[in-house]
Length: 527
Image 1 (tube, rainbow, N blue to C red):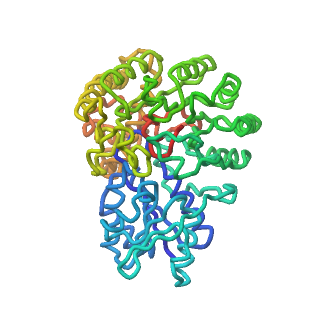
Image 2 (image 1 turned 90 degrees about the horizontal axis):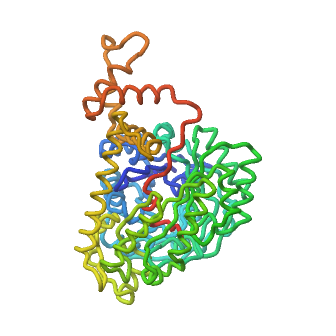
Image 3 (image 1 turned 135 degrees about the vertical axis):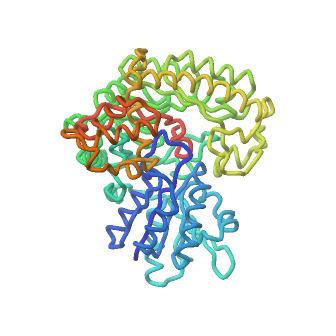
């Protein structure tokens, strides 16, 4: 059976990365003898022509798309387009959003045939087996589908008890060269499950509260395999990597024993780190920890069921600085109990920490308690237009602050912050910026440049250089740089330097910290 898996675009481009879900599913199905391809519409410019060409060449029998709420509109649009172009193919959708809106999705979108709920590996495997044998889908747990004009919903599937039964992901299913060019960290999962019950997060409902931990040595095997492919940085994608100390220490010790030199980035809670743990993480290469700090006001934190305090946050930040790990703070505006005063308090608290930080606006995703029990939290949900659930639009309001006030507050803050960042980037490109974030900005503009080339298909469009324009010794680099500099309105020297660096990329590129991880963690949970 031919199976096409599609990674849809995402509403922002700061951290493009291959979908771990599609990697896992694709690897399993491929190992079981199916023909599997992944169409990556994230690291390239979105185009229906690309979909048409893939459908015509591969002619899949099953087309699968995964999504979270933030990219659900594009995901379902893509799947329905595929169904229209290949009506004989079965259109399957999975991910957190449709797990909690399964029946609603099938009713509203006729181009979607089947919803895979929850963890998808075993459900998808059994689904494909049933299709190949012509068997009923009613015995496959974790499915929602149409049958005889009615929506059928099978019983929920329990979580996979032993994650070590899952194979090592075949990362070659994705266009690796594109992600290596952007110096994206490889995503590694060492465990599933989150013990916390934050009211705005859907993570624990997708992966359970009980911790399910992979064999630490298999985790490091995967890190080492990614290193051999060319990755120099690793992001541990666990909801809460620091949940089990012995697990963390064993992984770090094995990294050190093997002599792996990779910068590591993780997600953690402020009450799960201490000096010995942080020192061990730093020894193993940890360069950045993203903490979900959410608010600087205790009442707001309590209503969010965060079970944390600003004092604990300050202490965790101080400890990170002491051992040489960069802490990154993630905050949410518009949580239950929010007022103009609490937002001001949160901004002041974030600035007082002296660390990089980011904000997003509350989006009550399907499956979260702030959505299912909004009135109990004093929250009013204003729209179910999923295209606005990008964490940049105010789609709720509290008793103490309106959506318009939250949006205005955020616009003012982000406008100033964005202007400062753009000024630093322009200075970095021109070679005039000498501020404290110089190294960070240098990495950022390089990655941004690579992203513009790849997401805009600029190499494909601008890269055909006539032989008459090629200069001896430089090949097509100079004429290509001239074209790109004009198109992107960038200094020729900057474009030419980066083009040469891409051609002569060293085996160990400098680290590039994951940016906007506060958004990455929204629908996967980061404690």
